[in-house]
Length: 158
Image (cartoon, rainbow, N blue to C red):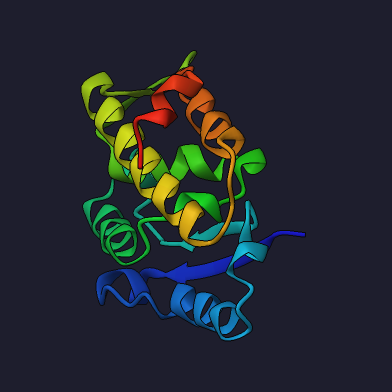
């Protein structure tokens, strides 16, 4: 079962992260943060002019909201519903990219490299803090973006 998080223009324009904070704080109180694994989906209600061709991830105010969110919860990719494309959309909010009508999102490769490695380091540490061992989650996450990390790589992370 997925958890939908509704955010609107007011949340975005005021950098109001309360819709996410509320859910995460409730789960943390029960000490069940791991139950959020691949559960979150963002429902973004942000009206635009009819002639505005931009995707949501191309709107600076929305990207800024997601940057603030990622700064507060750098482990959030763990909680995003990957099957519904939420990880790719979240990444588009944080990594420069272009849209190609036939191929979809085309991330800036160097920026994607940095993002994926940063999230790998953050999540590796966060998962260990939460007593989750093994690297299958991290490998699956990086494979979504075309990376194939060897087990030897994870041996370097302490």
